[in-house]
Length: 451
Image (cartoon, rainbow, N blue to C red):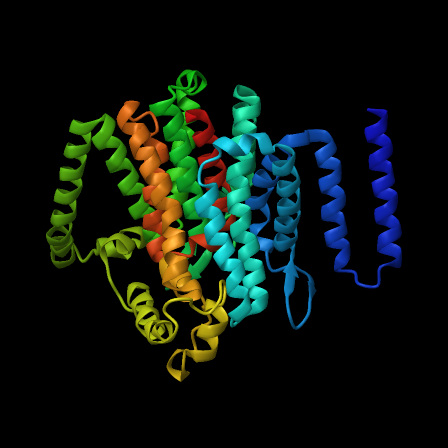
């Protein structure tokens, strides 16, 4: 204890000296991150990775706070967290190399990351290639670190995972509901008051809440968690909060992911209820339009004046991003076909799109593909896309085989892979760092439990 106090005192003194002599004030943020990490590591030891996971959702909104920038690279606060996580993960995994023998996916992940590194040689945007390759590496190291923690500490690690997951969700969800009640959410695509919590975009909050919902479902349906069953009211309240968060982000791809998850879980464990619910949903949807027409004609009331109903049932050019996504796809394909095998370098899509989108899209401030398969294929070609998909195919096939022989005890794990692949069709999941950090960590933890 005395040694930890002396070490912390030394770091505080070092920070004060650095901030006095440092001519670049923005670097003080990076120094503070390093000092905070060192102190937290002394306190939490190997579990420091869970601190990273808990903190990341709370700071996403400030991802554009720049620590330093030059003509080659921009280094923001979240990049600082990613770099520190990368360095710690490298140290942690090297010091636990004996666990690597049983670590899943190491070869397919290694092949994809190696191809991303090679793409730096011919990349259209070298700084983006460095940044995005680092982000992709962090996904694998989080998977590996969570796997090692679970194997090494067992039930103790599982308990701390819960603390980090639920503790890190409190502030984002509280702020989201403040935005809902105070009507201070964002107006996007003519939809007002889309809540976003501490995230940079409502879509990230939606997928984060969906992830939390799947984890709670895992504890209820698969693990039969005693604490959850003994606190049913609290569990029901948590589920209600998460469903409301998903609903009032107005993120349709998250709604689709939720519907797919519920249907898949239902067909495995509650087949009759799932079939009846699906039939009722289809019937309600078909009845909605004649009912709404009746209300408009006889009562001059349009149900589609309710924003959430309109988002579910209406299509209009201003609020509908489907046509926009199709337009981006159609315009990027000719560029892709010029270099279909190797692409333009990992992470290069935004810069290349901005430089080639033409005057008809000059108004469009978005520089993202909103489709991870298009993004990866465009950046690292069909070779890179095949390697990227092989990661998920390997993981999915592995879980499908396990499920067949273990009465689907990994059903949530297996379905969460499919949900992620669905979300990636219409969103920038590779840029939803707070979500995919947690997702890959949980996949690593669940993989360790099975092995």
